Image 1: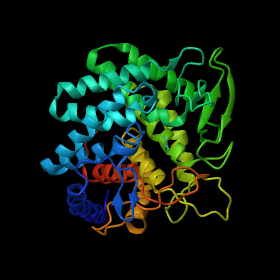
Image 2 (image 1 turned 45 degrees about the horizontal axis):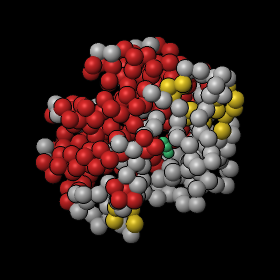
Image 3 (image 1 turned 90 degrees about the vertical axis):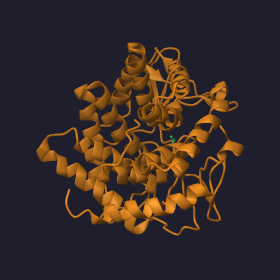
Image 4 (image 1 turned 45 degrees about the vertical axis):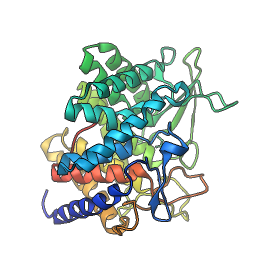
Length: 373
Ligand code: GLY
């Protein structure tokens, strides 16, 4: 990769800002920013699916700098999650998002046995969500009257590495087998012929029969929620990395090629590739996640194709670095213009996993990454 001085500059800006921001966010687990300051999900929603990303960011920063401040904050984030491990209704398909960037990262870096124990508990719970009828890992728990028993979502592909890790760690193939059965189902029912993907697929939980797809956090049924496309292309290449099953690389490439074809000239990513033409909502998280996935794909393809995926990834990250980052040290977040869901009331704000994946992408480009997936 040539002419990447902007990557080094961005790395330095992240390091400079993060030390100040981390120093004033030692005890909390941020989700978003209010008046320039991070909020605290440890107090307001300790089971929230994003509660591992702050710890993950801290481990990436610790790995790159050896500054113990980051390690202490990451360890604190991990301990707060223990309350979640004892809350059955707060555990779901997203266990990977919570315990891979915290406990697994800690265990990989330090060999901490308590961290290994936490991650194995999370993996066991996640594996227990597998529904043999339909061969899928159930998504969310029920929400009051709303029964979610038959729902699977594309996001789950990013959580499967927790199961691959558990299988390898304790030499037990069950976790990997469940992950692969889910990935096979996702390949069959989520990826459309043009390479775009569904967000939610509903199965009959008793018979396993396919019922229908739902638009979920995107514009609507049959649309193309960009973060879902990003979870798919990154998630499938991760399944390929962990299993070497060619079908998963092929799936990742189909989604990646579709994603690349739809990147606007600006490099800035909408919330949904099929949102109405006059709608300008962006989602920087989708761009950052897709860039990370494209960089992983570039390492798995033939040498002649590598450049296609590297160039697409750098286009996305450069656009974010130039247009969507806030380097003001009085503001806690880095990435701006993140959107959780198309039909939410609020759009284009800061979201912690936007910052996490932006940093992960810059770390991949500078060779500083701690691989946590
Ligand atoms: N996993 C939920 C989301 O991407 O918003």
